[in-house]
Length: 113
Image (cartoon, rainbow, N blue to C red; front, side):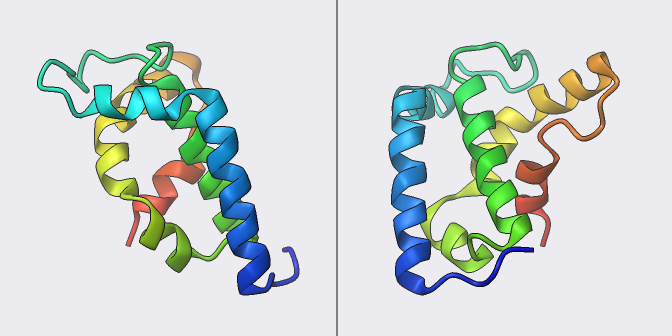
């Protein structure tokens, strides 16, 4: 486990993650997830609106799991449960198809209370 970061270091890491997420396409993908036409039951991990958010959520979950980011900070900044509800079904189907139960597990863990 990593040594605990200061609040400032944690905030800077979060800003860097947001920049990476923007470069990865989450700004374009997020609105599509909440459109009436988006169907979580037919979405796949390769959909352009799903893939970047799964990657971003997994990275957030990994940083929380390792202690680099606090769960509290992530909860204040993101609605992980709402995003997982939209992209999680695609991740779970991909796990089954690929036979890899760890796929996107850190993102899903963020939604467990």
